[in-house]
Image 1 (spheres, rainbow, N blue to C red):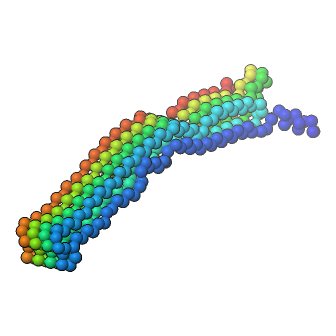
Image 2 (cartoon, rainbow, N blue to C red):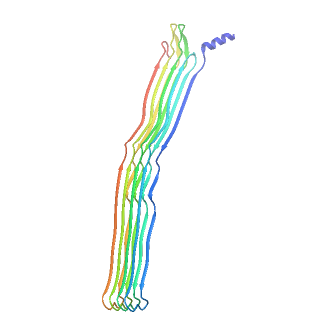
Image 3 (cartoon, rainbow, N blue to C red):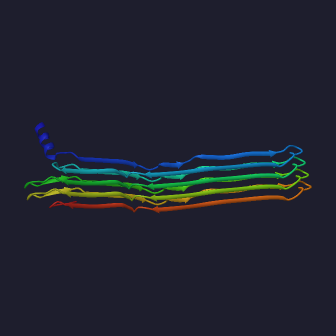
Amino acid sequence: MSSFIDSLVSFLALGDQDATVDNFGYATSNTGHNDVTGNDSDNFAASGQSSKAGGVFGPGGDATAANSSSNLNISNGSAALLTGSASAVGNVADTQIAQLGGGLLGDQDASVMNFGVADANTGHNDVTGNDSTNTATSHQDASAGGIFGPGDDATAVNSAQNANLSDGTAVLKTGNASAVGNVAETNIFQSAPSFGSGGGIYIGDQEANVYNYGDATANTGHNTVTGNDSTNTATSHQDASAGGIFGPGDDASAVNSSANTNMSDGTAVAQTGDASAVGNVAETNIAQSAPSFGSGGGIYIGDQEANVYNSGSANADTGHNTVTGNDSTNTATSFQDADAGGIFGPGEDATAVNSSTNTNMSDGTAVLETGDASAVGNVAETNIHQEAGDDFDF
């Protein structure tokens, strides 16, 4: 009895063939997300001056009060960023499955899943040549003579020169970004048993499932490049008074002179590399062969099923860039008050002069050149060959 059972089991050869392959990959390559600033300084130049000649009743002779100031801020900045290339590959899989049926009862099942995500980035950079804050200010008060004025001539003079010179250069060049989500080659061969001249019976299913998914993102864009983003303020506050309430005995002169200058220049240059993204590249070959019967014939009961699913998502971006040569804020202002003589005036000639020159000179150059962007969601080649038996196929 035992030998009979052993022979029967050997003849039937009960058993399933099951192969499962899962490949998962995630890759990130980054040379971006950089913040580069050439000049981020705060510069402040100020003069506070007070000049008085004579007392309450004024001097006996001539009186002269003079203030002279020169305030200068020179701010320059350069920022250069050169990123290397970024390359990311999520998953690369080569799968070979061969299931050769030698039994009479049993299923052949092969399942392959390939999943890959890749992100390559050289962008999202912030490059600023000059982001400084510059302030040049003069506060001046010149008074010649007292309440009753001097005995003779009275002269009060304020002279101020305030200047901000701000320049900035920003240069950005990103490397190329290449991302591939999933690259898969799958070969599945399922073969049922071959019977000799005596024929036979085969009961079993052949099932092959292949799932390929890839997501790729390549980015060299989303950059902000600014040559000059400085804030410049040049201001003069001047008050000149010659003589007192009753004025001087002779001539009186009150003079205010100011020159406020802001010179701001900026250059921004951005060149992005190429961006290439491929979501999924798959080659799938499936061959399913039913049993072969000899002259005695046979019976085959089973299904052949092959399912292939390919999905890919790709995004390549070299845009969304902001390039500004000069975005500075410039203010040049003079506040002046000149008074020669008092309520009753001077004894002779009286001269009150305010002279102001306020200048803002702002210039900027911006240049942008983006690389090429190429995105491919899915590239798939699928070959399925299903061959039934040579006798019965249910």
